[in-house]
Length: 354
Ligand code: IPM
Ligand code: MN
Image (tube, rainbow, N blue to C red):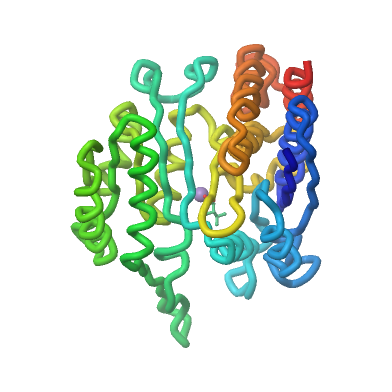
């Protein structure tokens, strides 16, 4: 099969983790006799530095013309301490999501036997936890307008907006996944306070009727935040709006053991993007210490979701498991010796190649 992908390392540790994931992709393609072509492009702070635009048109063109996008991370602290900066690196990621129509961000949360001890949660609570967070990605308070400041600068505002269509498509997607899993959907909102949440609930109640074989439950986001760490095994598919999903999935990474372990697939209208859920970890940039596994596992999702190559994805997962069982892991999850980012990548590539 021919695989034509765009590779966007982004900022901070992006370059290092993407290098490992790309080597893994190459190894898999070689093993299974796929023809891989790829091209790199800029996004984020590095794109602002080079072009003034965090998501340059060339990058967008490349994404549109590729079968899949492998993405690293975005963000640079030099913009965090400058509230007046007109463009921010994160706008590159948001622009990419919006322009590619990536309305669904799928974040599977599982445990790894070799990592269970790393979680601060009681082992028996999380052992076997397996849920899928589906985060709406192109609406809500991330994109609602108006957003800004009053003239005197002393008042700031964001706007949360959702339309019926936006809610319908993401909730339907959640039911699709639930039917391939354990037939349970948890719809997360704050309908006791927010008008957008009340629309979510209204629309969801209509869709729910089309799926009588699926158990549906409605929960407030604060309650989910608590139950996610108290009783994670009760969840199967969790669907929610953009910002709740952002926050809940960082929280959910505690179940897995490290933020450096959670991959994601962003799918929608145009080319799908595969990205770790973590950020650019600027303190670690260039040090070869960041955990590459979230990105490597995102590459596994790429094979499965973008190309329907299940065996290839499964082999990557197997290799990742083997590296963890052998203890070839980075410092965030190491119990004994900590390995470098590149050493972990190399080990996985060798495992796949043999
Ligand atoms: C994520 C990140 C982004 C988000 C940031 C970098 C804008 O936290 O992908 O979860 O909030 O969506
Ligand atoms: Mn996030």
